[in-house]
Structures are given as C-alpha cells and as structure tokens.
Image (cartoon, rainbow, N blue to C red; front, side, top):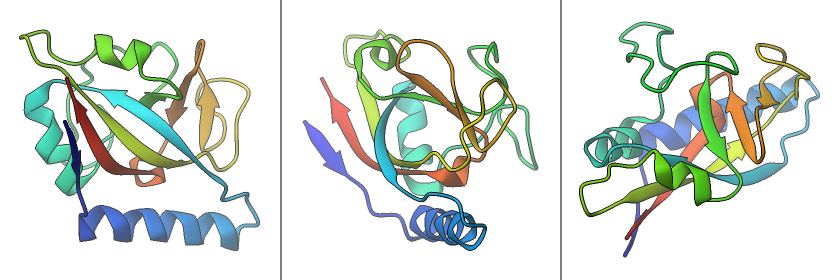
Length: 136
C-alpha cells in the first residue's frame, strides 16, 4: 500500500529552503530519498516534517546515533532504511523529495553530505519534503 500526503506546512518549508538555496546560487536539483522510521512516527513526519535529532526548539531525541553528524539520514534506495522501520509485522518507509544543496565532503560540511553506501545526511529538515509512505 502507498499513501500520498500533502502537507501545506512541509510544502511551504521545502519551498522556502529551495528559494533560499537558489538565492545563494546553489543547485536546487531534486532527488528522491527513502527514510525508515517506526510506524508511530510516520503521521508526525508526514504532517509536520522531519526533525533533526538533538537540534533546535522542540527537538527529538537522537534515536540511532549520529555517526555521520547531526541531520536527517536518508538513502537513495530503500534496502537499508527498511531496517530502521518497526519490526512488528508491518513496515513502512517514507519517500521524500530532497534538496542536497551544497554537498560537503565530510560530516557537518555543507547542506548535505554522503555517509555510507547510498546514505545522505541532510543538515536542515526543510531540505526534505515527505510525499509518500510505502507500507508492506
């Protein structure tokens, strides 16, 4: 099953991030990324957007570490993010539009940076627009 979400809140934040990057002369080419999380987190993310663990007002706890720096971890393929979804018999992953912005060479540099394999870390949650939830 695939659910489609349209949140005005997340759409506006993403549009503002895109506009800011464009104003700074940074590439605004979009890509699609997958994010795995516990099923109970999905509605909050889809309606209010991602949040960077341990950062900002009303921050969420860092759940799976920050080996590659603080940010939202997502991958270009679903294989590894699936492992971060709940294992209670039903799993789900979020498919989001992503703005990489200035790509750094290592954690904390730029707007995003590569982690391992097909993983990317996004410094600002506004760089991600959650659109689809794939349940299986």
